[in-house]
Length: 66
Image (cartoon, rainbow, N blue to C red; front, side):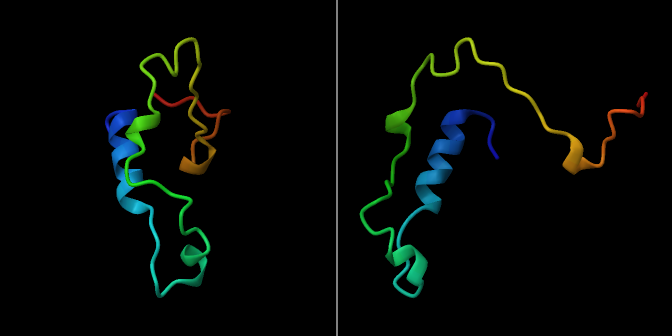
């Protein structure tokens, strides 16, 4: 996705928007931003724990990998 949360916020701004040929995105007109970095907080993740759900990668917790 990105090296940092800021990288991902920049990508999100590029990916969102309205496509006149797509009925689903037409309904979201006015509900998206081109710059999501404005919502970033320097200490937004302070004290939070982040985990990685490994099941989709085919890693079984019962098997010890070396």
